Image: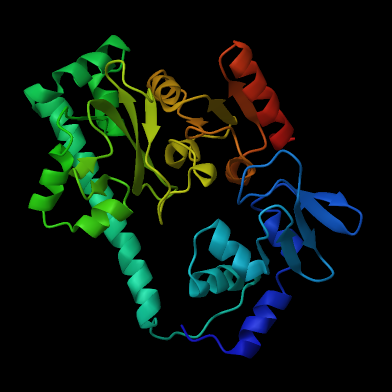
Length: 323
């Protein structure tokens, strides 16, 4: 779609930045500005300021800033046309059609390739778990945790083999490039030791986005290796502070609110028990970005954290963010 400057300016003018950003983050009035903890980096003291007068935002911690379009591009990982269309739809403005630029097509294609390779990896991990003798230890781990075969299937649970280049060899056989494997956070490459899978000898939990695309993985080690839990590093399609585990399902089951758990194994057990409105953060403390996702669907949140000191502290922090 071709977007004339005059039309873009009209779209921006009709989308007040405070109103739009309030749909994604929890802003509080402070003098002439609105403030909150920055959604783009972790902080305890709010340094993210939004000015209704200037229609701009600025974080004095990480120095990020811009207007309403820039925010959507950065926070929601949208392209420029996607952000403008989102704002146009919000205020009922129709946009003219045009061909995407080569750069836009390249970015969309890259994202699609990342979704595709993650889906292929998820399928391979699941196959090893349920169809190969090599996945026996992983399968026994899930069964000992009380996870049923149906739940294993529903969540696409898997197992990463003990060999450090097992996934690499499989993806290579399917024609995926080393660059794409690296960009997806699935394989790391070393000049001396060559390719090495990010996940091996771990049970695997696929992580999906709000459209149910596989965007990352969580792995729990079988044995004494550290770290005990490992998530995919951040990629072009995965930002752990702005995603929630199993939220694709939870968002459709939240008429009675959302249950916020500590980890993905807790969520899997809750879903199996019938509480499909359960979700969890991904290896980090609950963030403003995650709170904004929850608030899109419900105002009722129930915390199901552990009752130990760490769980109590995490619950208090989550409450301060949600309120």
